[in-house]
Amino acid sequence: MMSSANLSYNSVLKEQIPHRLFTKREMIPPRNDILWRIERGAVRTLTWSEDGTFITLGYWGSGDLIGSPLSKVKPYQIECLTSVEVSIVPPHLWYQDVEALLSHIQQAEELLSIVHCKPMYLRLWQFLVWLSTKFGRDVEEGTLIDLNATHQEMAEVLNTTRVTVTRLLQQFEEEGLLLRQKRQIILRLLNK
Image (cartoon, rainbow, N blue to C red; front, side):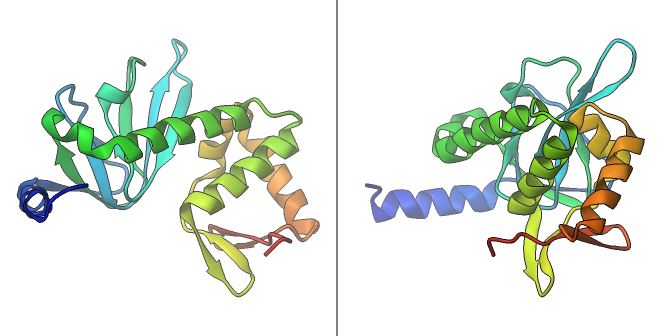
């Protein structure tokens, strides 16, 4: 258990950690000497294959830790999907974020298991449910995914085509499983 002196010291230390702001579609610089804690906003980590195909490694939001030290994948990029505020976490403070580090591993494994799900309609549905759990908020009609991922971005994550994602989203909408309002998706989860 931490003493009040340690808690006070940690609070002061957190206040001294620099924050950075990034705009939508901006890349957060890869650094091997720090982790970034997302204070506000959403990012995706990605790489690409030799033929230039993007490979999404994860979607991350408030409270998540991201950065090059968490990956052996090269190249490695962090793309802002919204405006983003991050704080810098230097190596000597990583031990304080064991819970966030474990969460990073768990989320990456969840996404990996979804990407290998078959058939494709189930893969897309599970991905939408995962997004709604991570970035969703309750609205009258269901759970609004508060992240505007394009059909192409979803296709890249799920290793399929944009056309397939569009067709399946239309099918889900016809079946009453989701609503689309402008570029936003509302899941109508039956167990709510």
